[in-house]
Length: 157
Image: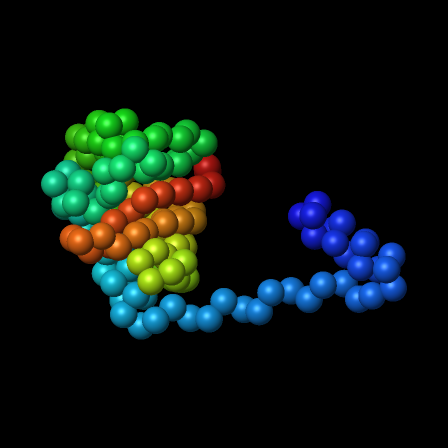
């Protein structure tokens, strides 16, 4: 933000016009968008059936993998895997709904996706409902699309 403001001030001081905004990002290729959306649907279903094996296949196992949720950052599969196992074991069921999903290509083998997500989890006694924004960065490897970064921000009631 600050650098944009400085660019505008510099352009105006030089007697010119402020810089034009970048052109809108073109829609991703159909195959890329479909592949990313398919991986996200598999991720959603893996949560609902509480399958650690299915979730593990959908995440990069690189040390750079990052998940941010509720202001907490976890780095690398070695830290994330036990946290996922714990979340799956604490809930007797999950319901995940993703709407307004948008996919943007970052290259032929990388994309970012963002949408509105509602996640309900129950332990059989208490149900917790979270409504927020999910953002995933994915990359394509030999096995298909995998999550390289996940960020979920939700409002507390």
